[in-house]
Image 1: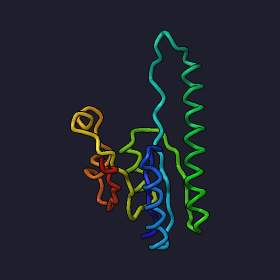
Image 2 (image 1 turned 180 degrees about the horizontal axis):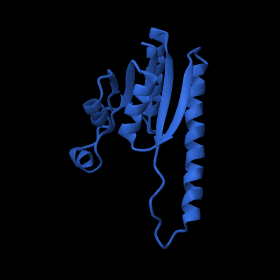
Image 3 (image 1 turned 180 degrees about the vertical axis):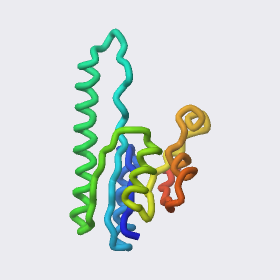
Length: 146
């Protein structure tokens, strides 16, 4: 294994995902790619909000996400592990799969939020989406027990 892909969303699971990716990379002497998939720009903007306001808001969000991503990468780098932080815009499952193939990831580290059936029916599950479409081993961090 040469590379661990850690997919993060900046939820309370992110630090656990990053820590596990670092442990795996340390144990297998490989690098880590931390990937955050940013929300795409909206196709259309309603009458109440100007397009410029939405673009400014998204730019601010991207800067915040980029900064947080680099903070996580810096912590891994301090452990002596090669790390590449990536902020990519697009459909979450598709981006994770494409990046994992591109870097020839040996494992994908994901976190499960443990949402209920209604949420899965409406929004889907990233873990399930990735699991259905990849042959790369997954390391899934379970949600915190209630």
